[in-house]
Length: 415
Image (cartoon, rainbow, N blue to C red):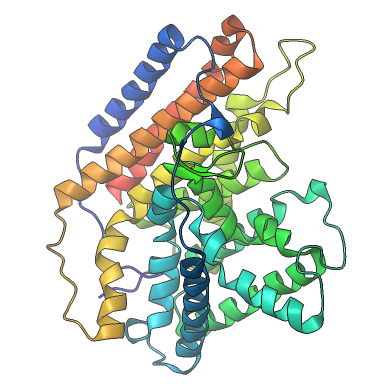
């Protein structure tokens, strides 16, 4: 087994013809834009009003799951501190980087913002608030609306740096202390500002919530659990401070992870070059996005957020597609390590999924993510502008998406 310089990992994916795949992905995206322009001329998504009611899960199930996740969180920290010092033999880094960080993507895309429901830090905060006689909902100070998702963006950026730039990100002792530090910071902030802090500052919860907007299961405006069109869910994501930073940090870190695994990354491994590379790739993603959305207001009197903020939700399916494409094989193969270490099962089965299937999933995830983004951008443009302007406003965004699509296919399939 090879422990990579970023996180954990045991296998790279074999490439398919990268140039042809990138070209095909770009053409599919352009074709989607043309079809939308011809056939989708008025807003169609119902957002928070859409969905067919579903039965609510038993309250006891939610309570039991929260308790179980809290016990597992504490157990991972203990194992990281006192378990075997070698990464291949310690459960903690595998749980953090594979089961939690990677596993939260498909689970949230299927079931909604599950981490918000089972977040062990919320459970810990509730207990501490009761013990300290602090109102868990209000805390002791008000959180300014201008804070938005900026704390989560910093938290996600710090995790990306730990995974991709730190020389020993999978060291069990380091993993345990990072989890302790994160729990102290997040729970302490929640004691001050109330439980709503987690929706602003807990990077994992914010990521799961954004992914959950694309789930077929969601909450309607009236609070009912419903089965819905995932694109209706995407339309429920409203502009707020820090949203752009969160989605671009997620795309940038995943893009750098792909670059650092490819033959294009020839610089020496280390904290300095890892930090420079991570910041540089993220900056490129930021510039591309701003170039596609930043422009003068073409219609006077239209009340809306600045374009980069108004269209930030369209990056969510792109980030989700990147994550699935990049981490699919890691979840399938390295996810077995947890069962091997916890239950003493046999060796990892590398025949579980073939390389052709891996490449197909990677390509499909990137293309479908960008198609969903194009649909979301078209819908939002129609809501903000007259039809003739709505189409023209998307030209720069289409160009940026094509570049991102081709780049993502090249990085993932060449890794």
